[in-house]
Image 1 (tube, protein in one colour):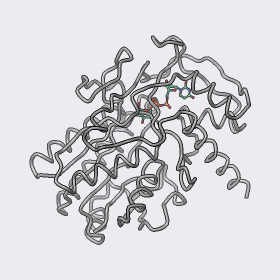
Image 2 (cartoon, protein in one colour):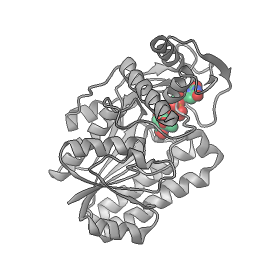
Image 3 (cartoon, protein in one colour):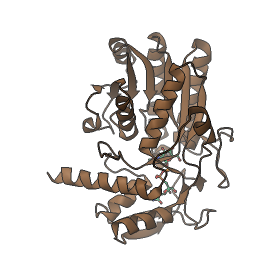
Image 4 (cartoon, protein in one colour):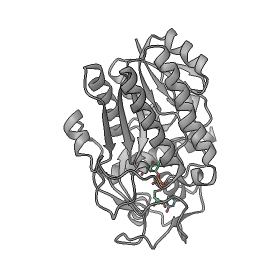
Length: 329
Ligand code: UD1
């Protein structure tokens, strides 16, 4: 019996695969390799190049590997891109998930864990956001994920599909043993961009907005180490397999850092004051996004191991150096 990870050749999915393999689980990965990388598929996992919108192919895969649980990570994740190209997000995230759910329900899969996002919530004044906070996505990306959560809940009520929706805050860092990390070219997320600037891969870093209602005027985010996030998936899987209730859980640490604080930390660790440029706000952005993750800790017994900005950035830097060395070889 295998666990299927969609998008398992991507940044987050590959870390989840490593975590499941560590626990001796059989893992099968489906990824269309649009943003995923074959090199990120951990040894020990089965792998197939496959688009989850291809219902027939997914049904065959579920059947061949006797899949009873699916961890669904495949999708597009860049907030400003979703504002420019909403159809890509409704198609890749919502419509493709619909096809996956049809395959899942036809093949009698018992559980699904869905990669959702903090972007489903309405903007806040900076207070930590709990799962009961008002829904109100500010971008097509957030809406595409909220629509998928809703569809999963309705399918679950109708057919008894066990589900956990994990709402990720800002995922960062890399595997402490450097087996995986963020490898997507032209990645847009802050810590990756700052590390690239610090290592000379980019000339500068632009700060998108210095007029947010935050202590230093720049955006504040709750950065969660990707390995701690992967552990939350394993715990969610065990929860469902042992008959636990359906859940929606925030994944973050409960405290945030501003863009300027992240830049200062990267500069201090690398010892290089790379150039920083003030730019206007980015479409779809929010000021402060910080998780109240008490439910994740209480219900799943999740205890983070890497709740430290320095550690997250150090792991990201080591990974970036590894990518640079590999590219030169
Ligand atoms: C990220 C995730 C998104 C998730 C959300 C939850 C990515 C690509 N996106 O979005 O999937 O739903 O967290 O909170 O990981 N910034 C700069 N300059 C840069 C890049 C970013 O100033 O070059 C700022 C942004 O304006 C923002 C903060 O850094 O204030 C974080 O941005 P980013 O890393 O792109 O992530 P989110 O947009 O928060």
